Length: 247
Image (cartoon, rainbow, N blue to C red):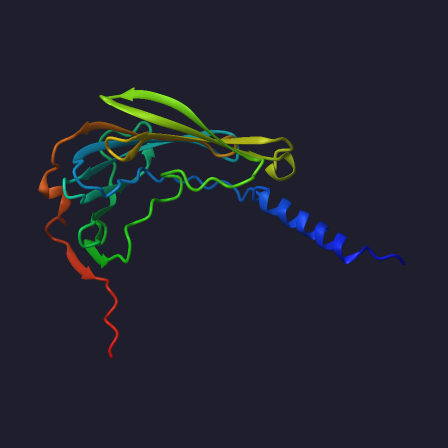
């Protein structure tokens, strides 16, 4: 029986490892999450705005479930931010969707306050570092030397007196792991406003799950009302900071 030299075995294992790292993960099934936008807690750029969110979700039977929602966001001159999450509702729904939760964060003392109308609890915590954007709400690090990933600059576009700069990211899922028998291309577009330090438009398209669009509208570049930056009356404030270690 002939054995391969150890050097050839090592090279083969290394090649297999690199190939596995580059290959996209197998498709886990429909997981449609629309994260909204991330409001960067920077000073001297106050605004209030509305965020429109629409989801065209492809269901297993091939039909499309269209749902929408909105969110109100704001940032004060000191950098304090307000961001909320509301229920996704059918496209035929009229009115303002139910508020599920809201976040207030102050970068000056790193105090994060998260409150929920369903429980009337406001949970406060001092964060060790600024909050991180939710997945897909901002572009993550670009994978290095990955032939299945492409990123390109797609120019600028005007929006409500702002100039946005865009990037497009595409990920190719090879036929052998796409569950469809053919290559699939997932596309993400991010349109950024340098003036407001936020992504104003986010588009995500996956042929297996559908399309989600997040767009910031009705921007008012004045100081937001103080009521947006405070917990509403009637909430119980809970301090969730861990107790200090005893010496």
